[in-house]
Length: 153
Image 1: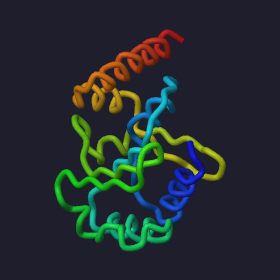
Image 2: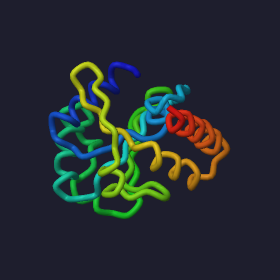
Image 3: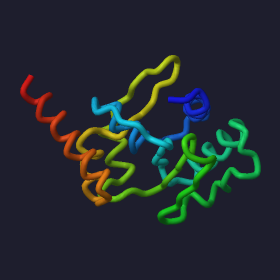
């Protein structure tokens, strides 16, 4: 993961932003490494979290691009920063999973000094199945194989 992404995650942690790492990086964290051109984050949709997110994004250097705190309350909100291969996508909703339930089932991985909350395996599989794209179906199949192997141990 590029240094800028880790710096963003460290900034989110300092500001106590409630988020989950999702997408390709979550797939890799669950034991199925694959390349990705962006970092996807699911953020909790509350005004307090919107304020923390805005402050973190401003500190990270996004300044006027940082969304207003109130924007986080809108349904299916989505922000993109940067360009592939270093794009950052921040979402408030994803298919088949609510933030509240996913937060309870998250895993946390320590990378350097950053505790990274990651979408749990079952939620990630459900999300990948619901997304319906070909690459998401492949991810879900690989993740189910990982889950199957871990249950045998």
